[in-house]
Length: 420
Image 1 (cartoon, rainbow, N blue to C red):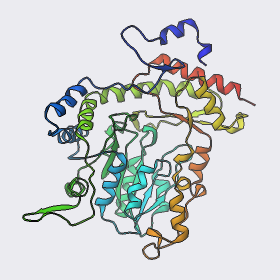
Image 2 (image 1 turned 30 degrees about the vertical axis):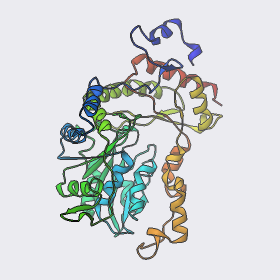
Image 3 (image 1 turned 90 degrees about the vertical axis):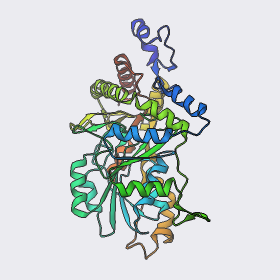
Image 4 (image 1 turned 45 degrees about the horizontal axis):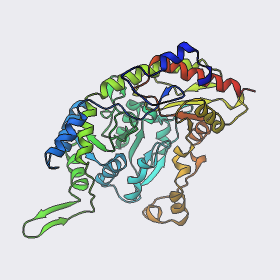
């Protein structure tokens, strides 16, 4: 805990002259975020250009080049990015998309808007990510795509997932909103499937005021996403104006957001590499604490752009709940420590449960080919893991090795206080 710090440790963590950062319990907080040195310059270009500039186009080109993909389609946020992709895929109402069960509402909103049916594969035991083994039992003759989430920045084992998808002619998308510039077997996230969606929200690894995008090498898909998201599904007819062939959206990234994103892109590689170094220092320290197991970093993840620290507490070793432990960790100085049961989408999406019960929307028969059930028990591995999962999302580019030692000291002290 903060009160247990030695004078020497406290001195190391005290902000130095010329470097002011807000701290809570001597650990860096996420905000204010560190921004690239040219962010203000690019924002000024938008203003001095009278708000008529091509900043979004410039960022799209730069981000695509940084990943080594052909296309980047920007959107106002990550939810709208995934909604754009869902609308562009042109599946039929009632078609199924297999989705990671441990994620956020933004992952599945677009699927539901298009009246596709989310089918939640379970996670691998002891982690928050799906695998080819957990996906395969969910495939039916109505399955059209697989949407995997690289939760906390840890990349799913994509080669077996892609091989499974090829055998069944399925589209594969990465939800990379928490994993910007993580690497899997030397390949960067965003290049591991048919398409990938990113988030640039303020708390994400690559942060702006908001923002998102979809990347792909598919020319036709990129063109269609622009038609749906930027052109609102409309073409221009001389003498008439916009003629809306399809239901579209006005999902354009604001120019000032694009300016900040462009500046952040110039420092993200450095920040991602730093997060990887910090995670690989912190994880062994946490692993030494009895009853506490951090999320495993797979050997095939050679760069972990850590967005969230996640650990599992063995309930047999403690006389408190995960909620009580996380609250004590927060009180002891770990910013944002908490549980994440709301990440279990099959349980959190009450509106889907209501739709299945009433056979409304995409669950009418037809188009649905069978009866669907949503609830925590449909994904037992995910449910069991989240029951005793504690996480915090404050590890950032500000962290130094001494902060890892302090985190481990806090967790060890709080854990020891609550042992049987």
